[in-house]
Amino acid sequence: MKLSEQVDELIERQLCQWPLVRDNYAALERLDLRSLSLDHSEVILQYNPERRRSSAARVDAVSLSQRPCFLCREHQPAEQETVEWGGRYKIQVNPYPIFPEHLTIASLEHTAQRLLPRRIDDLLQLAEELPSWVLFYNGPRAGASAPDHMHFQAGCQGFMPLCDEVLDPGLWPDDERLEAASDGFIGMTQRLGRPLFFIRCERKALAGFYLARLQLAMMQATGESVEPMQNILCWHDGDYHNVVVFPRRKHRPDCYGEGEGQLLLSPAAVDLGGVWTCASRRDYDTLNAGQIQHIYDEVCVDNATLVRIIDHFYQT
Ligand SMILES: [Zn+2]
Image 1 (tube, rainbow, N blue to C red):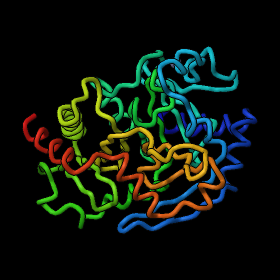
Image 2 (cartoon, rainbow, N blue to C red):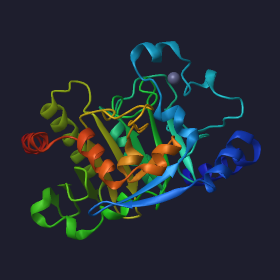
Image 3 (spheres, rainbow, N blue to C red):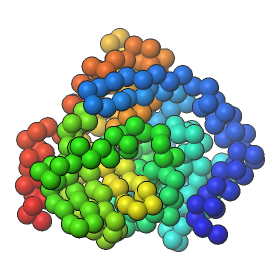
Image 4 (tube, rainbow, N blue to C red):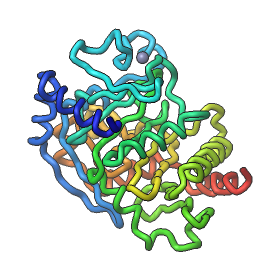
């Protein structure tokens, strides 16, 4: 059976057999949503109090060492079922969803969140085998709530506005492309309100090559030795491998918190994809486009860093 069919069956089974999943996915359908417009980009706000565990997760080394890892089998609920992939990953239904269908794809081993050296291929291959999904990756210091246990997530396509916005051919004239081949390109744009690199290639090998070079260029430009701070979206549309990389400079904005004048927002891949989950009712009611733009500007890399990344990309 194809992987996508196994996953469809997994979701059906878990919705029937696991009351927490059934309740949380039913609650998701009733969540309040509202939309904000940035200059060339849409943002959807979702009031989702169940996500507090993620938005407010403590990810410092001491907190991590003292909590049971929720991605390790021995700490997962008995009801949590798994579809294994490649002998290295387990695909599971995320019991605290943002998307109407939401998966966690975790390493079978408890091992640190890292993309390099070999997981770029895994990401592209999984996206190809799950054609109605968008996979995403949060760097260990850029929003991953389990930076000590390697995992991707996936949500259904058509949910994050950015995945459509970035396909606008008007964004990618020849001079916005860093490099192009007959069947694909890598480009950078700031016109969607946050700087991003976009890779769109028919050949998986070319997409992987661009992504690996970009990883090295980002590390060189920012002085990171293990992995750049980043969030990644990756999907396959039947013909093309699509990858969006958001280079980051800060994990949480200065306004992060629950006090007066603060916002409980901890942006990661889905937020940068245009869907902001608000765990706080006050944030959901009051957030405006200017505040979102300010947070994008604060947590994403600045212009000087972008220029350095591009310079290093050409040198690698
Ligand atoms: Zn673990």
